[in-house]
Length: 240
Image 1 (cartoon, rainbow, N blue to C red):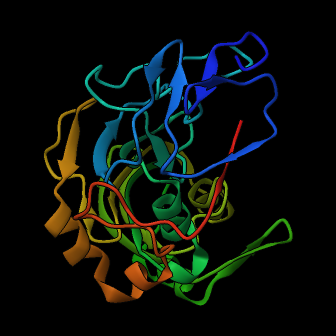
Image 2: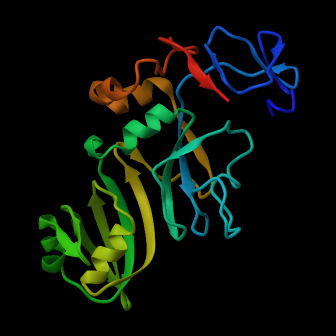
Image 3: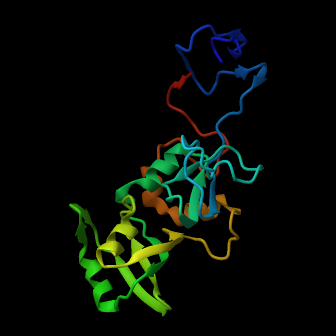
């Protein structure tokens, strides 16, 4: 876009991307000023099965971002859900917030409802509280409660804090179960509730601050604010 002469800073058309711009600069693309930094926003999204959590997929599979409501601004996901996993996915317009909430040190509990083929009892599920190693990968403590048996399947509620790739499927597979449905019902303090599939619900600013708490807010870069429209900045940001 720059080499095509479409980008201008303070009225001067750029011929190179080598430029530092600050929030005080006016940046235009095709003659229209780009918007400044918006306040931090967070949405709950009920992801259906069959969507990949990526902006584009080399295999041409449908993505979460292709199926979001049109009124949403550009957003990113906080963590990912496998293509066949459904349920709660957090979306935000703030990369800093996403990084903070994805940190292992955040320690937020993720809860899932799991349907799996096979038989198991509560005593065997209780062994997961001590962690388990599967194919050389060590998984931390998992809280698992057997809800009910349904034909040849069992329903289990599971809570975990690490969220390693395919963790639930691998762990239950090691116990002789085959997962055939996986629904994330909560991510930290945020609940899926009765949010309809493929719909989004915004978490309002005050509620967002209350749910994050002072510890997580302190981890976020200082320019973040749920209440301010234009956060402060200490220096230049790279443009291009």
